[in-house]
Every structure is written in C-alpha cells, then in structure tokens.
Figure 1: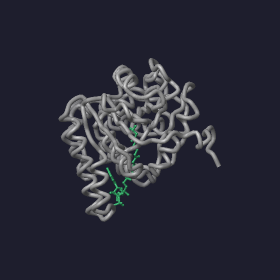
Figure 2 (figure 1 turned 45 degrees about the vertical axis):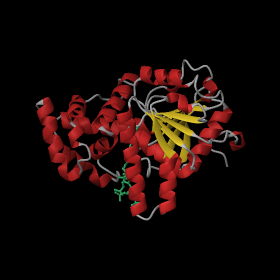
Figure 3 (figure 1 turned 180 degrees about the vertical axis):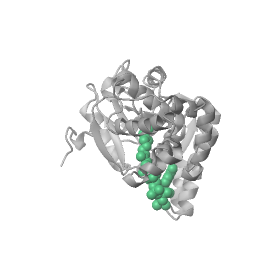
Figure 4 (figure 1 turned 120 degrees about the vertical axis):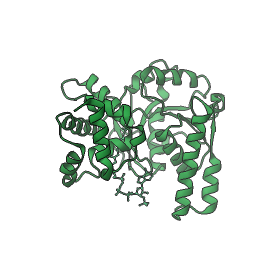
Length: 303
Ligand code: 3HC
C-alpha cells in the first residue's frame, strides 16, 4: 500500500550516478550509503581539495571498519571504495541523475550551489537538499526546472537512523517524488513525506528537547544533572549527548531557525551558542566527560 501522498513508484527515474555537494560529516556519511546500497558511482565535492580529501578519508575509514567487523567482504569493500570519488570540478557532475546538497545551512549558500549546478546537469536530474530546517521551496526558488526539487533529510548517524524525511513542495513532480521514495527504499530507510515547514517533523521535536535542556543549563542546572534526570524517560541518548552527535553549531543553528519561524514556541539559549563556539575540541565527548563540557559552558558564559 502506498503511503499517504506518495506517487506511483512506476514513475521513478533510474539513478545511475549520484552527486553529493559538500564533503562534511553528514554528506560523507550518506555518500557512503549511496555507494553501498545503490552500487553506483558517487561523486563528492567541496570548496577545496583538502575538504574533499577529509571526506574521502572518513569514507575509507568507515569502509575499513565495516570490513573489520565482517559486514563487508574484501571485494565489496574494494568495490564501494572505488565507487566514491572526489573532485572540486563541478562539471564532472554533468552525468549525475541524482544530486543532493549538504552544504552550510544558509539559504543564500544553498541557492548559490543550486544555481551553479543546475546548468551543468541534465534537465531530468533530481536536485535534492538535505536541509534540516530551511524552506526547501526557498532553496529552489531560482531553479529553471523546479519540478526536479525535493527535500531529502537524513539523520545522524546516517548508517543506523532508519528515517528519511522526503519534503515535497508545490513544484515537485510526481516523477521526482517517486524517484526520491524509491531511492530512500533502496538505501534501506523508511521515508515519510512531510510538508515544507520549518523543522519538518522530527527537528521540531528535537529542537524542543535540545532547547529545553539548554534552558535548564542557562538556569544553572549542570549538564550531567540534565542528562541523568532524563536518562530514565527512554530517550536513546541524553539531549547533550545528542547535541554532541549532531554538532553544537548545527544544533545552535537549528534552534535559531526554529526560533525565527516560531518565536513563541522555541528558545534560543545563550549557552548553546557559547558552547557551539568552544566545543569543537570537545566533540565526541560522552556522558562520562560531560563535566568537561559543563566547565567549558560555565567559562564561556560565566554562569
Ligand atoms: N556511525 C556509524 N555507525 C554507528 C554510529 C556512527 N556514528 N554510531 C553508532 N553506530 C552503529 C554501531 O556501530 C552499532 O552497529 P553494530 O550494532 O552493527 O555494531 C549500532 O550503530 C549501535 O551502536 P551502539 O551499540 O553504540 O548503540 P546504541 O544502542 O548506543 O545506539 C544510536 C546508538 C543509534 C546512535 C542511539 O543512541 C540513537 O538512536 N541515538 C539518537 C540519535 C538521534 O536521535 N539522531 C537524530 C539526530 S537529529 C539529526 O540528525 C537531524 C539534523 O538535521 C540535525
């Protein structure tokens, strides 16, 4: 049975080459997933070669880990590794039939990326955005072929989180939507079609959880206490551990977007922003080390 609003899968276009714009952690994670599950060439790009190389190194490291765990055979690992390549030359995207961007969460930056890539790719290629909370329609506002536009929002860690939010805008064609739903399925994810509203569905709730945890911190409750207090309610990880996972800057940015969209419903924590500025070396800290983050937070905002 088709999910509500889902188009006929027969309309889906084949995807024979994937282009990923951005080589950061999120982009690298799903570039690997595309290569692993679709077994098609995947091209990644970023502003400069060192960022591209960093993304490729991450991907190679993850393939190695999967091989060591016995999840991939030697041949599979080599095949997947060979499928992913990096470039700074966007012209090489010409024969990609699915291009997805995961660049900085700034409307102008994303619009610029789409303006650059659209004349290079074929008229039928899909342009997807992994934006977490910006308006998909606005990101694609200047496209010549807006029927190719769709939101395709992954969750961290991409390898294990089972959901993709597929965001349909008014111009999204049935073919594009069918392709997105089929790609999601081939990636082994369940897809939900959401409206193009800030935070879609999932980040609205997560931004609440993160925002309220940050508010507790602003009120003087320490991070370990917040984490410990929330441990028994059944979240897979505490809110600060989750912020650590998605990245402090990303979390602060999502908060800002939600506050701008719904000022009466969301809370922009000064502590979250202060921590975003000092947290880079602390990323990957686990609950046991939350004390360190708490100290950093106190230092940053003189609690
Ligand atoms: N990359 C790849 N694989 C990972 C991983 C990572 N970063 N983290 C965990 N895994 C894998 C492990 O290797 C393990 O695989 P295996 O069983 O095959 O060996 C499996 O996941 C389970 O790992 P753990 O044993 O460490 O398991 P946990 O039970 O602690 O689960 C978790 C880890 C799945 C991350 C769980 O804590 C969880 O679901 N946390 C919540 C995550 C969440 O809410 N994500 C959404 C963030 S919001 C977002 O991304 C949107 C953006 O727009 C902001």
